[in-house]
Length: 290
Image (cartoon, rainbow, N blue to C red; front, side, top):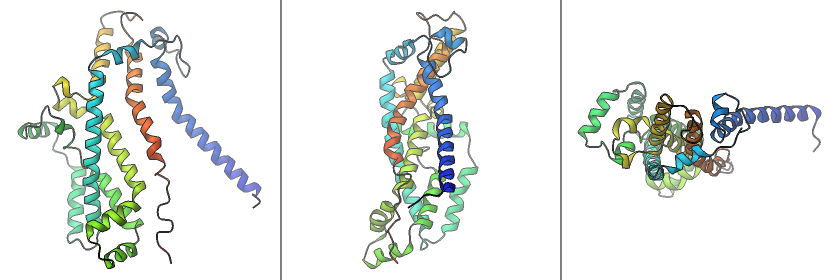
C-alpha cells in the first residue's frame, strides 16, 4: 500500500511531537541524576545541567550508609504491596456493584461516595480517630485510612459501564454464572488495562506519600522510606546552616536531595515497563461478534 505525501508529513509531525515530549520528560530526570553525582561546589554554583561535573558518589554512600535505610525500604515495599492489594479489592467490589443496573439505590450510593471527595474532617480529627482506634505506630495506619479511592472507583465503574457489552454479562447469566463468577470470569479479564493503571496509581501514591507517616508514626522501626529520606535531607539542610559544606565532611543539601530523589524513584521506574504494556492493549477486540 502506497503512503501519500500527506500521510508522511502527518507521521513526521507526530514523531517530532513525541520526540520533543520525550525530551521534555527526560530533561528533569537527567538533571536530577547529574546533580546527585556531581561535586558540591558545582551544584552550589548552579553549573550542573545535564552532564555531571566532578563525579562524587558521597551522597549515595550517605544514603546507603544509614543502617536503617534498607529497613525503611523493606517497610515501604510491604506497606505498598498490602495497600495496593487492599485498595484494588475495595475498588473492584465497589465499582462492579455500582455498575450493575440491578443494584437498587445506585444513585444514592454514588452520591454518598462522591461527597467524600469534597468534604474532609481534617488532620486533628483524623489523628484523634487513629489514636482512638489504637492505630498509631502501627503498619495498619499507613494502609487502612487511604486504602480506598473514590476517584479510582469512579474511573473503574465508568469503564465497566461503557466498555463491557451487556450481552457478555447476559450470556454468562444464561450459562448459570452468579455475580461473583461473572466478575471473575468476564468483567476482570476485560478490564486488565484499567486495572493495571489503577494499580499503578495506588502503588505510586503510597510509595511517594510520607505526610501521614509524619503524623502517625514515631517508632523508628516503622518509618517508611520517604519519611527517612525526608529526615535525612532535613538533617543535612540544618547542618548546612551551621557549617561550611565540604566534600569530605558534609554533603550539599541539594546533592543529597537529588540522591534521595533517585533512590526513591528508580524502583518505580523499574516496575513501570511491566505495567505499561497493558495501557494500550485492545482487550475488547473480538469480544463481541455481530
